[in-house]
Image 1 (cartoon, rainbow, N blue to C red):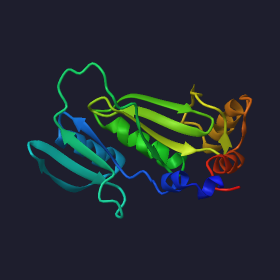
Image 2: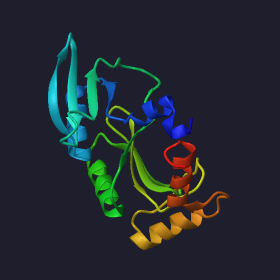
Image 3: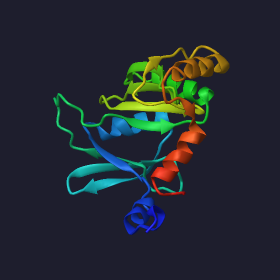
Length: 190
């Protein structure tokens, strides 16, 4: 049986990521942040028992991509969410997201980096959840890799710096070659 025809791989291939939900202390403030900074729209809201839920989406074909659930206890010393990541189309959009985040008083810990395979900004929302917005680069390099990058440079200079950093890694290659190899390893192609 070839990997692509294996029932388990077929079931796994049928899975696509849809949405995530997380607990928050102030659902209304958090909904406002996700609307203003990241362009989400509230698609529904209501109570599930005593838990307030706010459903948000940026995609009209998805009822919700994020669910904000009230009830996060005060004073937690650990945040279970490592990060919530959003792909953007280009560096101009990345800079615009950064500007919107910088304008919100609830945003903290802004940093601009390259991972070689992406150029990213990271920041925290008003309740400390880490958000990443990123632009893919045309390269693959093994991870983790995180180097500071200056988004005030022009696009060509930023991509040149990202490529220079990525190219120092032993497995550096074009993303398209890496993706074709992953498709073979995952059983999507032979």
